[in-house]
Picture (cartoon, one colour):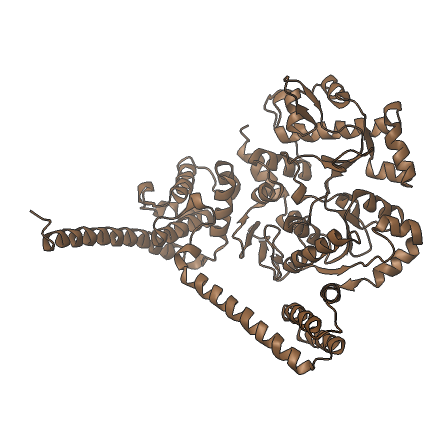
Length: 581
């Protein structure tokens, strides 16, 4: 679908990039047009994600992602260029240009979202029908109110092979689309049958209200207990959270991370409307970064069993890397939040929340439970684990407080514990220093694009080529000073951008990121954003342009000279060793 350039330009003008990025990242303003936050594309504790509103671009100094509004949406939502434009157009209240494409061949992603929405409506209606009796009985048995059924859009998948597929076919969806969306599976005979059968259905809805997929709870003794939609063009278990669409509106100032969907529903029903779940999988870094867009505090409320404790410890490590402050709930006398609330009430759970342990206390207690502190070996084992935990703390005062606690528990001298902690910190720093030194030595690699397919064969020349592109994008009027030819570019990607710029100059068209982006892949657009992020003095643009051109040509001459020298050296070696003439 070809889009008019004027439409793209208008869309970019109507999209404030700081406002857009703020839907995903907590930004802090530092200067009039400069904003900083934690990168949504990789885990980090110190903000390296930069947004410039005057240039309407973003760039992460940690992972290298960068570009404009369209590129940001392509990256964060995993969309094609056309789908990203459509996403932004809807956000800006603009109508996408008509292109005469029939409904059947509409964007795969858009059609899949429509199918998921219609499937959710079907499941919801089935819950109160004759085929939904088993699911409704289960809802009542678990004490879920009608209000919660409506709030979460709960539904029933009938205990039939083709109930959903037949209904969706009537609405015009094809078998291919049903299988593509993970709502149906293809049998050996070639026909299709429903993926979800005899299950209580939980639609997974994103923060914009789109139904991405489903999670179904079995109603009999079958397996698996929970079945989630497979990964599709719109859904990924590792990148989404159940009920975040509701929890993001909470005023509680935190998120509660539960293990199961029923726990989440029960928590919301009890008034804790900040609960989410990780869709039956262990917490991922993507999910933690997603949570960091909406809160700086998380309380982990996983099941009170061995698997739950193990998952809690793993989640703590992930939250630490994401910069989120986390605490852990210890539910004595109950295996999960749903059971605790039913047994002791919402008020008791509220007290439990207030008394939740910070991650250091939780980890120390978990370590302590493994050892018999009445024996010397037990004390030594606990001390080894405890000092390792404390050495990872960056706050010295916090380390001192817990050092005193561990000393009191074991009878060890605080100074001895501090000494061991200091040694471990030294080992950690030495390892980090070594790692940083290795990274610093790889200057050429650091200068390379993140994407392997964009690798520079001649980094020196490429740095000059980047400069030419950057100056022309910022000051198109200097294009009449260009004496450079396309074939002088050593990087195919930079040659491509340069050709696009010069073609628009010849056609008398404007040079903007919006005009260039449609012709670039996601990786190319991201790297172009990184190039444009680098500072360039406007007052010296003409001189800088010539310097960059000289650099390109000088790098080429150097490369040729090196090649000639290598050839001569090889010939000389042959003659010396008797291989010549």
